[in-house]
Amino acid sequence: MPDRWKQLAEAFTTIAGKWTALAAVGSFLLYLFGYLVLRFQLSTYGVATNLSALDERYLFAGSRFFVYLVSSLPSLLLIVIPLWVIFYVPYRLMPIAVRARIGNYLSSWRSPNRLCVAGTLVALLFIQFVLRQCFVYGNLLFLKQLPRNQWINAILLTDDGYRALYFAGLVAVTLLSILFLFFAAPAASESGKPRLFRGVLVMLIAIEVLLLPINYGVLIASQSLPRVSEIGTAPLAKGAKAWLVWEASDSLIYLETKPDDERAIISVPKKDVSIKIVGYDPIFRILFGPDKTLVVASGEEGHQ
Image 1 (cartoon, rainbow, N blue to C red):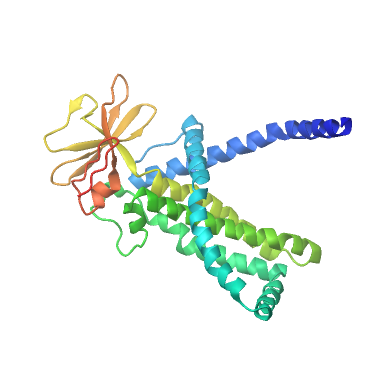
Image 2 (cartoon, rainbow, N blue to C red):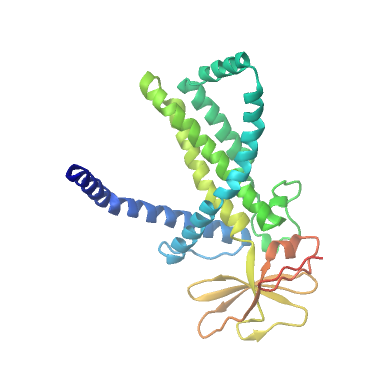
C-alpha cells in the first residue's frame, strides 16, 4: 500500500510539473482558434475593422469553438454508428473464408507508406473540396444573392441541427486523417523507411485542424445577429431594420436595411451610447432565404 501511494504521489508530481506548460499551450490554442473564428466571421460579414493582437474576446471565441467542438461528439456518433452497422453486420454474416480473405487484404494495407498515402489522399481531397469551400463567402451583408452553383449555400441557410451534423462530419473526417497517421507512425518507426509521406500527412492534418475554426466562424458563429430598435441614439426610419454586427473598442458597427433592400454599414462612436436589443435573427436566412421578411424574435422561430 505505501508503494502505491508513493507511485500516485510521483504521478501527481509529474502532472503538476507539466501543468504550467500544458496550460500555456492550451491557452495559446484557444487564443489562436478564437482569432481565426472572429477574423473570418468579420470577413464573412464584410466588416473592415482592425483586430488587435491582444484581446480577451479571442479567448472567449476560442472557448465557444472548443465547447461546440466537444458538443459535436454526439452528432459524430450519429454518423459513425450507422456506418459501423452498415459495414460490420454484413461482414459478420459473411462466410469465415471470405472474412479471412478480407482480413488478409486489410493487413496488407498496414504498411506505413500505404497508410500515409491513403491518409494523404483523404486529407487532400477533403481540404480541397470540402473545408476550403467556406472561402467563397465574403462581404455577404452587401450581396443581393449568394455565390451561384455552390453546394455549401445549403449549409449556410439550413437549420442549426443540420449545420451541427455537417460540422460533426468535418470533425469525423479530420479524425479519420489522424487515425491514418496514428496507425502508420509505429510501423514507420519500426521499418525505418523514409518519412516523407508522414511529414506531408502531418502538414495536411495541421491544415485540417486550422480550417475547422474557420468553418465554424463562417458557417456557425456568424449566423445570428442582435436586432436593435435604434442606431446609436437615432430611431430607425419606417420600414427599416438594423442589427448590431460588431462592437469595436471605440465604436459600434450596425447593418441597416431599408424596404427597397438597400443596405449600409454604419459606425457610431461607442461613448455614452446604449444598445437596445429587441431580438436575435438568423441574418443570412433573412437576407438570402426564401422569405426575406423573416424576423425572429428572441426565443422564437418564425417560419411560414
